[in-house]
Image 1: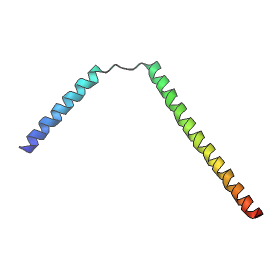
Image 2: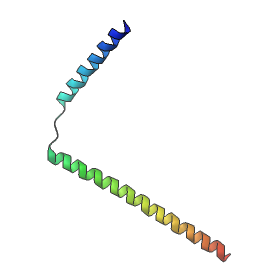
Image 3: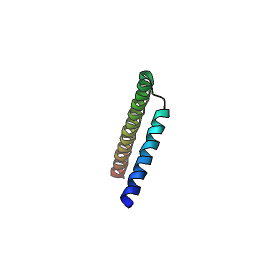
Image 4: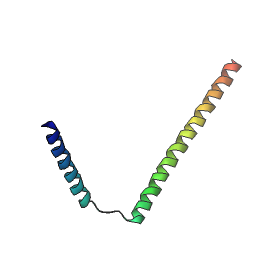
Length: 71
């Protein structure tokens, strides 16, 4: 039946996943800390870049408005 086939498939997948898990090396606390720091750095830089870009765009808009008023 399809149910039996499905269960067999699930069991096979689970076994495969578990086998994969066992082969992976466990990370040390220092490694984890380093990766966390890297992630934090990446997030901050992208947000600041976006903010800077926004500021520049706003300045450009104001300049355009001023020039239009002058004309």
